[in-house]
Length: 422
Image: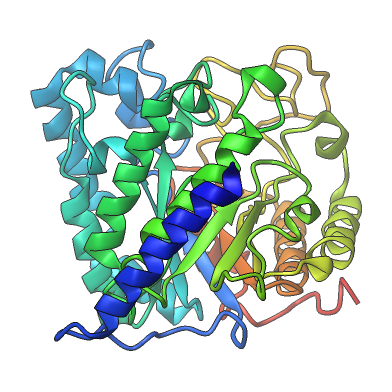
């Protein structure tokens, strides 16, 4: 069933590609070779899709019930939500950020956006206007000579139940076919809008972090695989050059070996793994040496065994989950034992709502050591994209401030602690 549906989509895609090749306006030249260059990037998290831990003030100004972009917009009403979000969109990321990112030696930005920005539904409380800023970002990236991955970060019904999907709570994306179809409609819009910008837009991610490991409470894995086939068809109907980036759905990444692999009729398909070591009890208790060993082992055993380009599209310098609202507004932290069911490991003092430069010297050194190990480890694969560029005050996560404080290597190829994964 999956194959027959995909063969139909692929036939349509190839026919469209032939028509595209004969069009009078050729695509711009492709700007990045994932097989020959290492992707080195940063996410622009919390800009066009809000998360409480990245910009807590935006949510706190709306009251305690504002826990995600859905409830924030619902509480404020569409007019006030549009006013406040437009102020945020205008100021949180600017053209200057792109030039700073380029100056640090990076070559990519990944830009998350929610489905409501692309295929709005008047019955939802969300407001629109984000695509105008995504258009600006494409221009800013072109000017700074950066590449862009366009990332559909939130899908109808929520694909993971996290606030980063736009709506915290149940995972209903694959329960209703209209949610999947609406997501495919969003892919159509993004592909048609940006796939011709191949000098900048190297890749499109059709779905961020679908949660496939919770059984009936999560995303149906077969439905996700079919969605990936369909997304591929939508992309190839417009572009032969743009890469499709597939998140692993929290499966072991080697599960995806053999799926849409090179040599099987597919081309320019990339796997995206997100590697964090703070959201599982067995990982957050590790010390710096153990974290370093863990990411190096992951690279040697997993990344090196993949049959397609594989990136770590989200990771961090954090070894605690102390950042305010990181586990969701109203939740505590595992590290200090305030998260339900957790046990005390250490104090969160100084980790939340603080400047990187205010951290103790040994803490900053440990974060840099962990960051450098991950840089080396993830370049075992096709590269990496750090989460995230800037925050209102999360020193373990804020690349912009880490660069300024000599915690993140600048340029990103420099090392104080070389050979950790040797």
